[in-house]
Image (cartoon, rainbow, N blue to C red; front, top):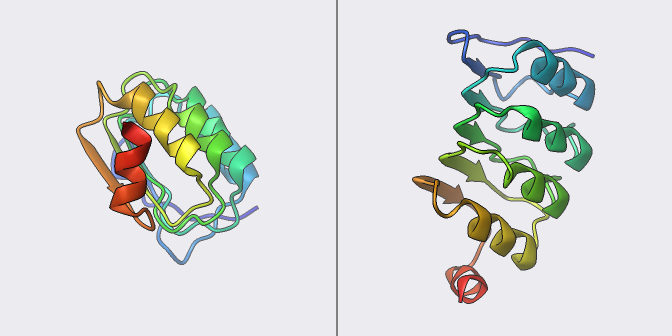
Length: 130
């Protein structure tokens, strides 16, 4: 298990794209920093759905960057939908289906203020919300 981090403050955690966290690293971050507000995990391809599900324990998490994490799927996104104060999320490309994305949007629509996605066609998103 290896990672180097750049702590911004006690409520933020960011990794550089050259670091590859694994599920065990993410578990340690969640356990050791339960009050994280911002989390940048962009381009951590060694973390799979089961690792990202752990993020659902971060009840203060407002901003999460999961861009370029190809192995995020519906199970992880549904778990993230339960974060009570999540307001910004960055996703894609990922293994998320239209049904998983639609569930997430329906659950989080009232609190989301910023959503960035890659690899979703606007027609698919529009149809999933109707």
